[in-house]
Amino acid sequence: MAAAFSALRVLLGIFFFLTGVLKVSDWFSADLHRHMALEFVRFAKVFPLKDLGFVPEPGRYLVAVGWVEVTAGLLLAFGPQLLQEISNFILSVVMIGAIYTLLALQEPLAMCAPATVCLGLLLLLNIRGYPAAPRPKFE
Image (cartoon, rainbow, N blue to C red; front, top):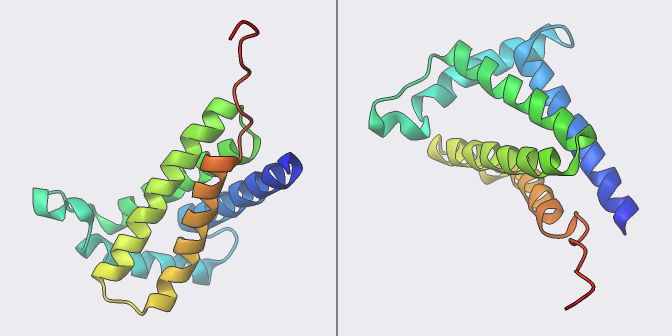
């Protein structure tokens, strides 16, 4: 079972790395990068901290989310266990934000499916994907 969780962790990490690269650069696909930039104009309008007066500039928002996904994805896939757990938490927060944003924009529920599946897999890794800490001998 540990091998399955390790494979899932690496695959999810690579997935987030690639989606982050699409947001940060047009190197993979200029069309997808352009589409993401247009979507983040809409996403910035319903930013969760908007009520507190913080509305991000869409281009910077896109780049910030992209770099978070690139960094956390690499750490999730190939980092030590502590950094894997931290990046898992960070990516879970990003996915919760993505779901909130899509619901606030009143997108169809089918649009939330990828973020929901990713969040579910991240939570599965968080709950079951790491070995238990060794017990002391004198318990």
